[in-house]
Image 1: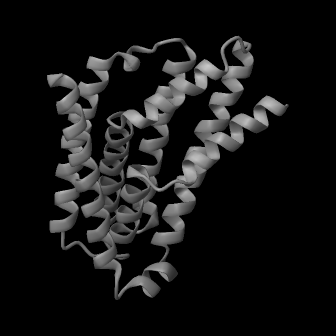
Image 2 (image 1 turned 60 degrees about the horizontal axis):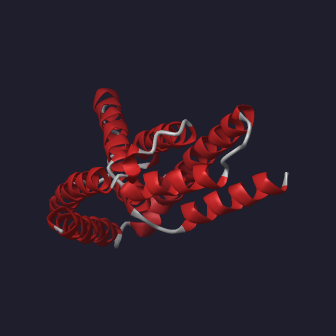
Image 3 (image 1 turned 90 degrees about the horizontal axis):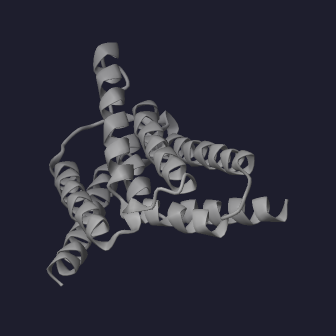
Length: 205
């Protein structure tokens, strides 16, 4: 029980630290509403789930320096492109958009969330480190931990989406929503450039 509490607290504290996933959800929620943002939430949780399964199964390829650098490079380039698209976007939330368009946006956001989660090496390294700390745990215990973490990631991300993308929140943030979404895009660009720079140094060294 003590081990579960320690794992749960460590995992949740990591979620509380704003990062790429947070800003992606925040921008999506403010630009398209919380329902559309749940697509990104599901994609991010899915990517986390894949890392959890890989780490708890003993697949630590991500820990290889060259592989990690390549993922960082690809992830950085992805974040820069997404961030620039966010900054240049003039999209405004339209609650009356057609169902077909809303569904297409949701599906697209699922893919965006998966790509963002998989191309962020910090997610993978966190779960690899956690798996090392849980070495020797029974398979049933690892399955329980994995299921719990997937659920918490999805639940927290949906909470953030609703908090920032509900009609009430969007009404209150209307006057600064564009600046906030632009700031989110700028963060992604800066974070992506940092990843590209770090990966380039590692590959060239």
